[in-house]
Amino acid sequence: MNKVTCLSVLVPVYNEEECIDLLHERLTTVLDNLKCSSEILYVNDGSRDNTLLKLQELQSKDARVAYLDLSRNFGKEVAMSAGIDYISGDALVIIDADLQDPPELIPQMVEGIEEGYDDVYAKRTTRDGETFLKKFTSKQYYRWLKKMSNIPVLEDTGDFRMFSQKAIEGLRLLKENERNMKGLFSYVGFKKKPLFYQRDARIAGSTKWNYPKLIGLAIKGLTSFSTTPLRFVSIMGISVSILAFLYLIFILVKAIIYGDPVAGYPSLMSVLLLLGGMQLFAIGIIGEYIGIIYSETKKRPLYYINDYKKSDNK
Ligand code: UDP
Ligand code: MG
Image (cartoon, rainbow, N blue to C red; front, side):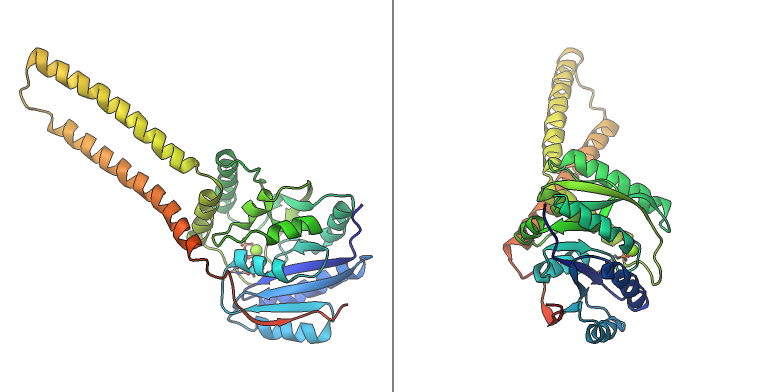
């Protein structure tokens, strides 16, 4: 039994002035009915609207509220990491500000943690308000990532989940700069339990994601958890070399037996182009990994804090 004494709620927020009050209201209704005490840490990820003002207002009204103001927009992955470093509870739940994840699931998550699980994750059964393309690409991506990496990546699972003290400490140890949190949540392991839910549409405001950002995150996930693309390039190189060698023997033998009337511009050109393309592709994949090595060797701090206000709950 892991009794939860103080639950920390971590909310990364970026330009969410329209959502914050609605979220806070629904969240506090749920937290009021919990047996444990709680803290809500809002991480302002460099919002350019009135989000910070709203957070300061909430902080002065509600003793449970803490906020962390990052020096600029670092992206949701880093905002969550910063929050994980600053929370003070012995269980942590991460929730989006747009109410796509229902806070009403929190009591069940607490039960899961108290039963002895370390990561109670919400698994989507449906996703409203998202395009077919986004749902399809995200599903396929996680299927392939799971196949290519040797860590068990969870399908249809977002960042809405609750962690035990053990898992929180595990997450704090991960210092890499290129982060895909969903991968890291799986990486730390521990006992996991799914809860099923229907993902609603965003309550107000607009999504902060776009395809270039998502593709960037997808490449980050793939390259930081799997070296399968590199292996693929090696296998491709070996296969092409074997084929080329066989073809070389074929041409030599043909030239010895039948002579060589110098023809074959089309075949020459197509082989040249194919090989050129493959080489560029291979260099591109290797380049992705060099990019990661480059960024990790700089050892830059992950985020900078402009302001931090604690909750007065304890
Ligand atoms: N978010 C953030 N930094 C960013 C982008 C998003 O902190 O650079 C937050 C955002 O405020 C929200 C959560 O991450 O609380 C999820 O963002 P969004 O709803 O735009 O993503 P989606 O649900 O469409 O995947
Ligand atoms: Mg959303």
